[in-house]
Amino acid sequence: MAKKNNFSIDRLINGERVEKYDYIITQQDPLSFVTESFQKVIINLDYANVDKNLKVIQFTSTLPSEGKSTFVSNLSYLLGQRGKKVIVIDLDLRKPKMNRVFNAPNKNGLTDYLSGKITLDKAINHSDDLGIDFITAGEKTSAIINVLEAQKLKDLISNLRETYDYVLLDTPPVIAVSDALYISKIADGIIFIVAQGKAKKTVVKDAISSLKNHGVNVIGMVLTQVDLKSSAYGYGQSYSYYSSDEDRDL
Ligand SMILES: Nc1ncnc2c1ncn2[C@@H]1O[C@H](COP(=O)(O)OP(=O)(O)OP(=O)(O)O)[C@@H](O)[C@H]1O
Ligand SMILES: [Mg+2]
Image (cartoon, rainbow, N blue to C red; front, side, top):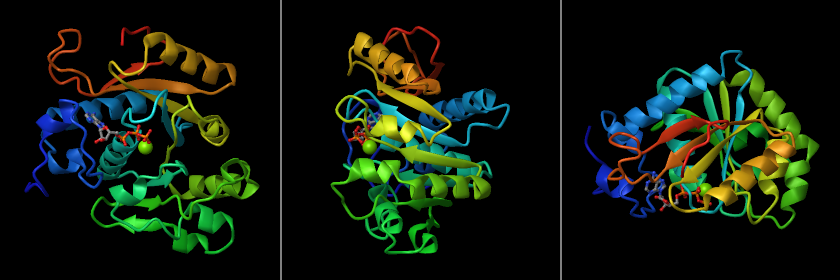
């Protein structure tokens, strides 16, 4: 398949920062081992989800820039390709990114719907390119916690459960703000994104323990930005998935 631009897998996996969020590597390089790694994540998710009770899934990390938004966009695309009906909601109201993934303006989004400015029909967009639905964050607000605690948000999620196989929530990291914790109350589980070599192992463990202590279902952990030259991970492990109970060296 023709590439949209000059970005290559090598640049992505070698940890070079790329800011082209509309470059979905699993779409552009379907045969790459990065895509293969994503497929493995989906298989693990399928195993974790035998009872089909993990529908609303939140993605967070310890620190900023560990690869949450990139991960969510690729995973949503591949789930859509597998025939799942998927919607992505940008619940990172501080640093929204889904508008950039879907090449859409960050308006008529979640906050606009919750404040009653627009109807739900208007808030739900469809990406013809990626074959999935999405809701952008919408107009910036300073009342973020109020938004995240709103009954209307809970009702929205319940409503979307009826229509979609997966409702994927892109959210902020846990370390600086409590948003992720509020969001966890409306999610069935969390997938924790860990960029190799970024947060200290103890800090990641503390962050995950703290979520668990709040009764959060941590479904698993995905390791991103793995140094492929490191023998500990080896070829094809640019994304790896572990159950949260496994003790891994990061
Ligand atoms: N697997 C990866 N390998 C290399 N670079 C990556 C990978 N995933 C993401 N990146 C790059 O890392 C940067 C941060 O990615 P992204 O925005 O997805 O992270 P984030 O965790 O959502 O950040 P934030 O906390 O700001 O929301 C971007 O420049 C992105 O292109
Ligand atoms: Mg993000």
